[in-house]
Length: 244
Image (cartoon, helix red, strand yellow):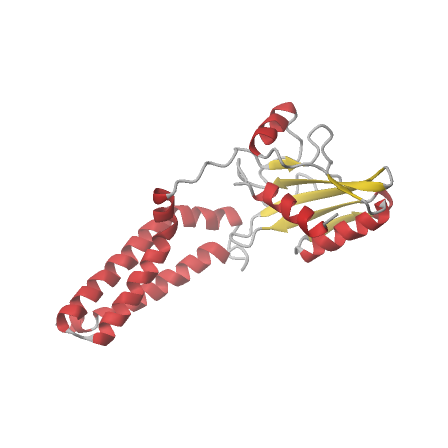
């Protein structure tokens, strides 16, 4: 009887612990607890079981307190149930609206014929499992099929002004600048995803084109066969922020 009387508090405590666990899965790498791929592995392995446990405990507490007409317990059980359902939301959403699988590529360039090369960043970068060597025609064809809109950015700005603008946009986007070469109008940087803190390495090169200039960009994920479209999305965001 005593356990039944405190079911809501127990369910709320379980939900609180579950919520902390989810936060750690998502942001533990940012806190320096583990590598991004480790947090992602925890997420894929434990999120759904955790959500089921929290939801089940919350539902049980809700029903018990409803039967006993204890409003406080009903509230706590309901909160726990909602937390559990929130954890299950990605799985439920995927079942109701299956998403198309992202292309199995992680190296995206605005110029696939002559992709910008990395010079400062190399194979020793922390946690890297993917090479910085470009995959050639096969990769170019896969990118053209998956992301046909990715192309160089043409701007009316003079080359030096375009380089300054590109560097300012990169800093506004929170990239960690790894190397600058103003004389050649190129820089290398590392961009990190907000969730899991995955690192993607980026090189930007500005060249003269007519009265204006052309801005090329390439992004390579350090881990994973597929980047889930992150590098293509980052290029689009960069170009939109840059403007014409």
